[in-house]
Length: 68
Image 1 (cartoon, rainbow, N blue to C red):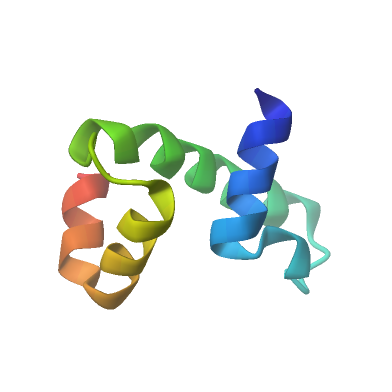
Image 2 (image 1 turned 180 degrees about the vertical axis):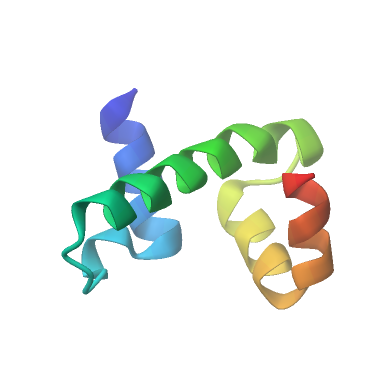
């Protein structure tokens, strides 16, 4: 499971390209990304993650609705 989530976080959010080296920031961002990965199937069960990511990326209001 960890391997799959890491791949999704890196593929969708480019997690490995992050330039921050603050451990707390990295851990908190990983938690937020994991939470979003668990919420996406609830709000968009019939769409692939990449398509949902593109939709949410271009529509911040929809992204906020997923997180609320």
